[in-house]
Image (spheres, rainbow, N blue to C red):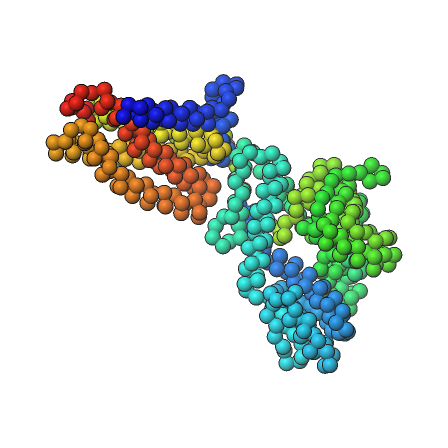
Length: 531
């Protein structure tokens, strides 16, 4: 038994050393600095910026159908169907495309094109006048909206990461509301963050259909009082320093933000800041086809934030490299190139909530949380010493090791400690004591039944084990639900509580048993146990 006990003791010491290293790492700049470098503080403790964003996912649906309109026109022409009109006739239903004007002899060919795999996400219906109505299915819309939200989260995360923010929280917020929660500890300038995220600006290149016009009224007059269904009016300067004008652009973009593979800030031939970009292979092929067909005759508009930033004539075919100018400052060119490198948002966003948490509030929370944890732990340790006498020392040692393992885990994993996380630590202390109480009371029962100290300890741990597992598993399941459906601070509470409970199983059952065995080994056979 002595050899076995020595091995278990060595294992506990090794665990102690490993998790102590997790807390302090390689000490530098003092013990306090080493601990704060390893255990990150959350927004509510460190201070920072809290944002709630809403993604306008309906725009992604509209953009997808705009592209399908352009693709459908090309597919019908390729099938020899000339004269058909393809467009979205109902602004209130951007998911609906109408194909009309198909020659009677070509209806079968048109149906074959529409039933191809490229349009499998649409329900196809035939109207009384021989037209086809394509309506995107609800399943396809939900999938597109989900992808839009997920892509927006990843895009924002990449941009925030490139800004060097430590331990940001960027995740879905609410239930089905297309909202994103952004929490940035240590960042006290929300305007700067908003500039970076908001400039995630949807950037696209559109074919110019007409213009420029001085006003919207002039544009309408030049187009017989109406705008074609496949076109739109946008305002902008069209060149650096020029006055704002109105342009008639093709609604479907030739290239948009998600097509950019790389972008870097640069300078034009006059030394003014601009942006050089590289397109993906697929987008480059598509852009080459468009510019080759319209070189010398057409022009294109670079649209950023629904503003025409630059209009340029197409002098030659462009495949995958180009430049964007438009009166940028050096900072604007740098920010925009960052956004294009990390991918454009698939839809625009708006801010529902912007809040700054000051570091003084965080300092007060830490101070009060530490006071609460220390006071609670001291009270519990004192109770165990008074009520269980010598065995109380056993429980207190296991309790301190439990806390050390939990903090070491947070240091190793880079977990963020939040105020709810501190609550999780305190709750873990309570759960740890609860396990010891179950074991100690069972040992007392065995002693009252006349068993020896060694037998009572063995039976006490054996019988209490099932109850301890039951209480811990149910609590861990509850914590898992909090983690799955909660937001940042609530997740922090769930993580702290879960690992604290797992650590408690180790300390309350294994460590406490080793301490009892060590005490019993030194006692004479039949000697009383202080419990």
